[in-house]
Image 1 (cartoon, rainbow, N blue to C red):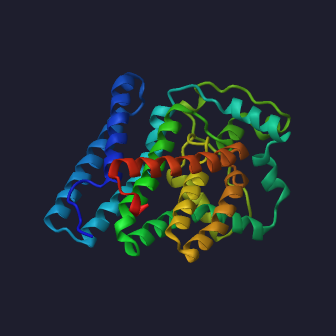
Image 2 (spheres, rainbow, N blue to C red):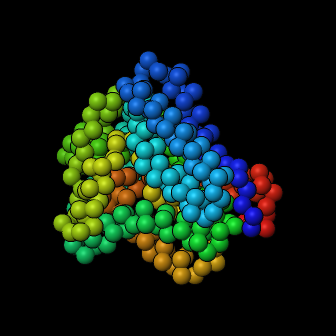
Length: 313
């Protein structure tokens, strides 16, 4: 395949997200607690993307293409906490979602799961499933890059496009999740079925419950990930589950049985891990399955329309 020297569609998706959120920032500027770091992120993201694109134009090869891919994936680690900066100016909605959870299950699975299941083996397996999120993204991206290079832009467009769609949802849907909401309300009150409206509480508070489960390697990795990047935001729907589903669909589409069946058990573990470690309500995980699948098919169709390359997907 002869490489084109224009921006990849997944880079264009990032630029579109940066432009959309920049306009939103300017509209809400006076209400945002930290607008300047947000502006800096967008300037750096755009400048670095253009710089890597020009490097590729100068030396078009797989190595410079790989730099472009890796940069966009690494950049996701900055886009995620950035959603909190806009999200926290809106009224928190956890009381509504906790109430829906109670109505659907008659309890709070995120509160009871770890209390009822205390096995160190189960704890480590679920935590392993949760921290496998990043290796799974890398594995699918690497497979498409090194094994089916012609289809790499498509796979990256679907992955990154799904992330940006989730981020847009998180900006406008302020749900912190059990680890923050339960801590703020008190687990005793939650257990009694009381879910008070906290209003703007999470605009200034980021204290969370300790990660449940037995101490072990993967449990520690979950704790470190939470300390490094978690914010009281992005609970509904679960992007961990949603992106895992997108990856699973892409693995299936790759026709690599090894890739698909390697990811499948990790995705199952991740689904249950999201509310075992209290990062999400159970309804967040269920919604992640549905929304992730919808995003995959929608983005797949969008790519087909834009490129008119049905043979590549």
